[in-house]
Amino acid sequence: MDYKPTIGLEIHCELKTATKMFCDCPNDTSEQHPNVNVCPICLGHPGVLPTANKKAIESIIKIGFAVGGEINKKFKFDRKNYFYPDLPKGYQISQFDMPIVKGGLVDISWRIGEEREIKLNRVHLEEDAGKLMHSDDGKSTLVDFNRGGLPLMELVTEPDIHSAKEAVAFAKELQLILRYLEVSDADLEKGQMRFDLNISFSKDKNLGAKVEVKNLNSFGALESAINYETERQIEELEGGKKIKQETRGWDDSKMKTEGQRSKEESHDYRYFPEPDLPIFSSDSFNLNDLKLAVPELPKDKRIRLEKEYALDSVQVNYLTEEKELSGYFENAVSELEEDEGKIISPEKIKLIYNYLTSDLRGLMLESGISFKELKITPENFADLIEMISAKEISSRVAKDLIIKMAEKGADPRQLVKEGGLTQVSNEAELLPIIEKIIEENPAVVADYKKGKTNALQFFVGKAMGALKGKGNPAVLQKLFKDKLT
Image 1 (cartoon, rainbow, N blue to C red):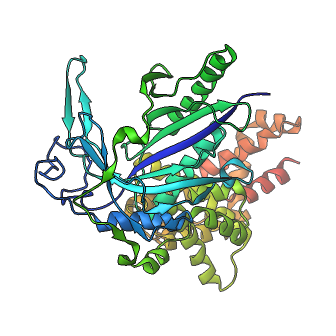
Image 2: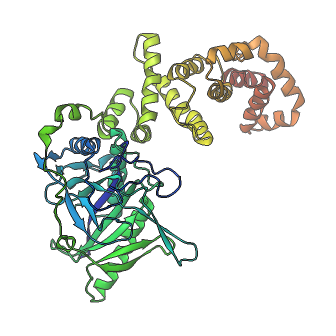
Image 3: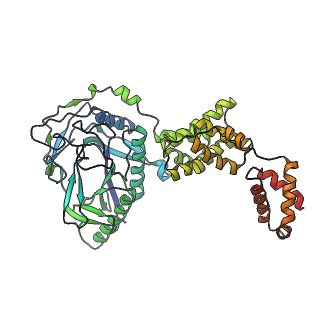
């Protein structure tokens, strides 16, 4: 019997609030001078008193509703005692036996192509630590406490994951849920989301010795760490060795984990209730309003988009991966529905999807433009699609118009009118150009008559160039065929 992995994840994510978790310092980790967003409270000076950030607690409650967890009637904060240079108080305010949320599920079926839900143990709230800054020569380390005290969600799964594929799918789906809830940007590159991994191997239902891998900061690192530990642990087990329960770190440059210390248990942290904060009651929060504030989540949106717009799973997943992208798509579709007073045709939906996800999205990524900064309104984009569908403009002209619209925020119909860009479909107007191109390219004519069909595309391309992209390709192709037979 083969060894089977059992994996649990602990995911930390910085919450999007105006201030830190227990003081009124700004929640701002943008590039700036170290140690400017600090105060006696988050620096752990003697005699200071923390005050809990209400919005951070509400964010955890919303996450609890989103994953179908149970909101505890009572929850409290605890002191987690350990020493580390970036922890100024010598302890972290966290939650131990009375978290805000218990249980829950995250559905990863759409990501892995089969029915699968990952069970959650809890979601709780704590404060983040500072950031160590090592010198290039490795001889010194400084500490930046700007990040220290930020509200930090910790979500713990059950040991319910059994492959790197499932682990990455879960992490990506959770990131998307947090973004839909707008409780965090969950930006991995900015360190706003990090993973701890627990993994063990056995041949039966009994769990093996658990190895923890700390502070994985990318989906690639998460996958690679699981794959490395799989190979390392199975090799040791097959060699008759016992797996040591320990905490290991992932080295991106070496693509391997390395032992750091023996694995801590909860009693090693000497948890005890935070004496400066009360026990909280969920009745103190408007749970009904918070539940209603949970938007349509990725799983439900995928199902609806597939049903309403007859999109395939690849298209649905692409749109859903970005809340603003799917919103723009639906707003553009609604503009055409409103204009026609009837359900939009599948052909127009396809045009909207294709031009949005290739031409417009490509331009935005290249220029670094967000949807908030985009000057092309869904209404103007829908007008552009209508003109393409009605063959008023060619595909080439449409691509050029998208660039101009993004620069000026102009109405596409006005741009077409000003530039004389209406598609030319009149045969009498096209024939002189066609005849001239045929006359100037006798060798290509001979190739076409020998059966080289790509010669036809050459002729159409030449005509489109002569017409500055305004020719109707279908009409041009028909006329060339007629003339060459």
